[in-house]
Image 1 (cartoon, rainbow, N blue to C red):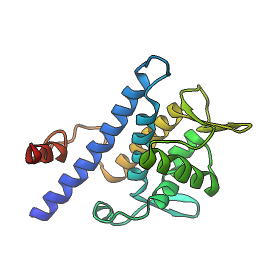
Image 2 (cartoon, one colour):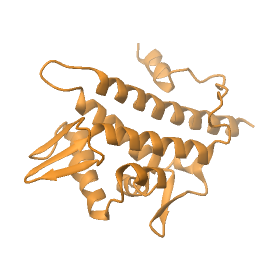
Image 3 (cartoon, one colour):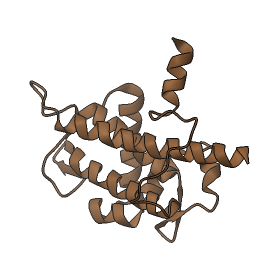
Length: 195
C-alpha cells in the first residue's frame, strides 16, 4: 500500500531529523569558540525544536505525558507548540532529568526562550545560556537567569529515547532505511530541485 509506505517514510524522516538536531546540538556544545564557551544559541534552538517535535506526539493526562492514539496524524497536523512543550516536560524520563516544572515555568521557557531564540535570535534580559554543571535546567540568582544547555540536551535525549520506545518496537536495533528517502532526509531532494 503506497500510503503506508509514505507514512513510514515520514516517520523515519522525523526520527532522523530529531537525531540530527541532537547530534548538531552536541557538536555545538562540544565546540570551543574564542571568547565564548560554545555555540550556545544554535544548540538552544535545535534542542527547543526537538522539545516541540517530541512533545507533539504526547498529550497530557493527570499531569503525565501520554502518547497520542493516532501518532501518524501528528505529522500532518501542526498543533499548538505551547501544548507540545507542556507535554514534553511531563514525560517521566524528562522529569527525572529536569525535575517537575510548573505550568508557569514551562510557559516562561516557551515564551521567553523558545520563541525569542527561534524567531528573534535573542534571549530575554539578564538571561544566559551555557554549560554550568548544574543539575537543574533553569537557575535564577537575583535578576540573572541561567539555562544549562547540558541539562536540556540530556532531557531531550531522554525524551527522544522514550518516544522511540513508545512508537518503535525495534528501538535499539538498526532500522531499515526505506527506499526512496535520501539518508539526509528531504532536504537533499529540495536542494536538488533548487540547484
